[in-house]
Length: 306
Image 1 (cartoon, rainbow, N blue to C red):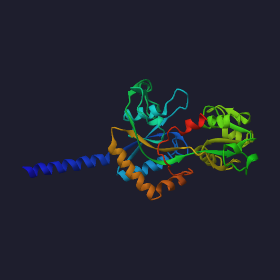
Image 2: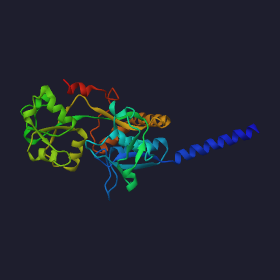
Image 3: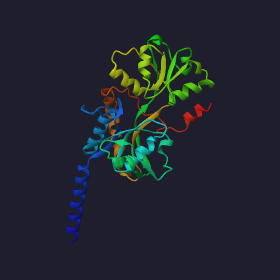
Image 4: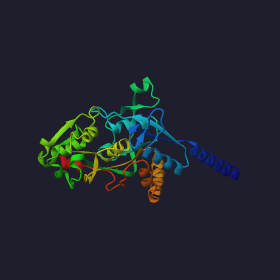
């Protein structure tokens, strides 16, 4: 009798393992975040995060299913709550390229949140609110930095710090981190050199390429995307990275620690093999490895308050 029970338990465990292997690893990715992730109608999905998610799924022995979503960058949106809603609604088990800051990983102060627009969403999906859980990060897999990009007239200018931008015609998108850093630098020393553009309406890098301005400060991955789509660009990388940046990684729900542990093991193996850096290079992403601390605290707030 005991032997039969043991055999039955073993068969049940095997069946559970097989089902787990057959279940797809569902990953939510932003549809318009080149060169990290790109999803366009009539074209093959591409980007660093697409390739990395496939590599992680293969390590876990599971097929990959991507849930595409669109994050609107406005004053009313909350990337943390949008990611939480997608996870809590079961749209995915992981959200990729999540920015690791202390504020983005705190327990939500609300009980429900609205879903962002996602592929396959119905009218009811756009109206309803989802009970949210608590987010849990994986280990980071890439570091995102702010960099100075130079126009043709400033080509060759040595940039070792923000102060070296003095005297240049600076363009910056209003409301961005780069805007705050430039406007508050040394109590406003650069203010007279700055022209503000409207995100989503004005073409920041296009204006810089035309020669309307001499330099800007923006996320490195955006310049990577610009170079990929404009191989004849006049813009050049300064090689300067602002000393405070953020790591990116996966975020899931704290209620599934086994998944986070398995993903961390897969990421460690891929990092050790050099696969993560290789995937970034193939996608046209300037790869910077994660830095300590893994989760950014209040370093930026202290800089902005000086």
